[in-house]
Length: 95
Image (cartoon, rainbow, N blue to C red; front, side):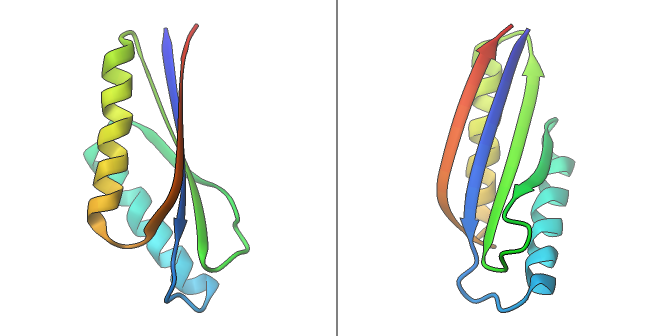
C-alpha cells in the first residue's frame, strides 16, 4: 500500500475576513473533490483570514500514480488563481 500526503500553504492577499476565506476554501475543496479521487481538507490556520493550509491525501498501490495524482492536484490548484501558493510539501510512504 502506498500513501501520499500533500500539505499546501496558500495566501489570500486581498482577503479581509474569515467569511471571504471560507468561501475560497469551500470552492477549492469542492473543485478538487469533484475532479480528483483524493481526500482534501483545511488542516491548519483556521482563524487566520489570509492564510489557508490544505491537506491532501491519496492511497493506492503504485508510487508513480500517487505522485502523479498529487502533482496534478497541486497544478490544478495553482491554475485556479484563487489564492497564491506559498509552500507545498509532499510525502509518499510505502506501508
